[in-house]
Length: 117
Image (cartoon, rainbow, N blue to C red; front, top):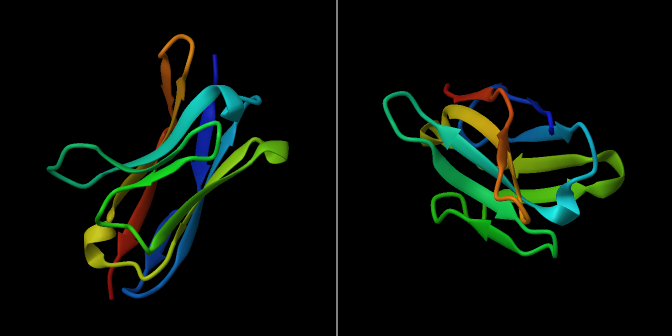
């Protein structure tokens, strides 16, 4: 079992920045695909960015060049640096870990990001 806890959400003006954190209860990054997802009101949950155990990253087209996903293995923490935020980035952001061997996925509780003037 793995627990994931997100933090760092909040209210920010358009053009601003936030850094989200996802703390894992144990070391899993090398054996999992880690990712950030988001869900806006009335919309389906969508993938924002993922990072594999070998460091390969993927970004949704809507966030390329603005968001950066990273991990700190020593701290068992994953980050999402979000720059040049837009109102359409407003959503609940979720952390996910999917284990390579079992395919089992774990979700955090989510953190709200609101981009508004």
